[in-house]
Image (cartoon, rainbow, N blue to C red; front, side, top):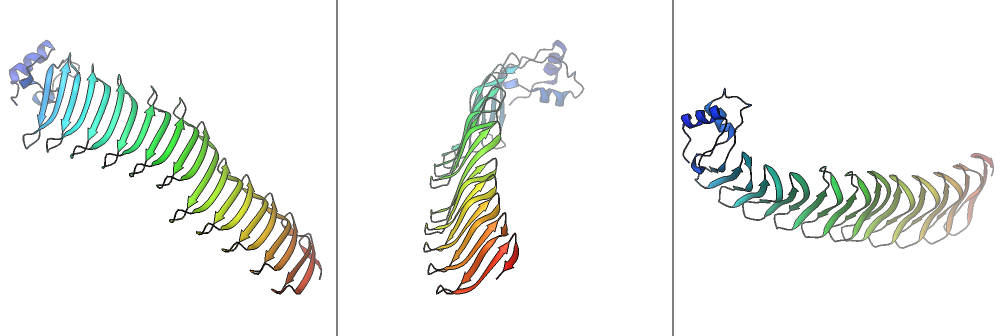
Length: 315
């Protein structure tokens, strides 16, 4: 590329207008290198095309200008000659499609602009499969929905946003096999409801719980890897409330107890593997209150006690 003469540059500074041929196209930074003391407030208008090359002589950059602003197809290239970026400017502002490629020609990013403002965005895996999708409002904040995918193509996450760019509505997260892992409900970025599902590596459900404002609320179930229930419990705003049951891996009930506001309240029964009751207790507000007894595995009584408000009353 021919470098513009110092005389042409000086003349351009004097008249405040730079209008060179394509071969002489220069940038403001290049002007500053020729004359570091130039007036920064000088009105300089660039016309035509600007081209830059890699050291291997392959084209690296192509910028079109009109009336001093980038206008038209902007393209940059990898050293191997493959297209790297391709987007369109209108009067100096991004407008339309923005495409970004890897050096093997596969997608990396894809954006859509409207008069300089980002509207939508897509990200891709190296295998050209969609990784993430986002949609923005006029203020550049996430709007409507956001989707993220696994490399295999299955949906990973789906979120909804309001016009202010805040999480609002349903948010769903999935495992790579396509099973729903987590369900959340938001209002203005505040999580008000959550349903969590966790799985074993073999795909069997491990845990299923419900949340309200980040606290367990409602049923919670835990499973063995053979799908047999381990534990069933009920919560109210993060505290155990209601019945709680624990089972062996063959389905035998081991423990059954009652809670109220996070404290044992009511009967508590513990069983042997043969189903025979081994221990019985009565509680009130977390304290032993009433009769309790312990039995041998054959059902024969071992001992019996009576408590009142947590203190031993009689044997």
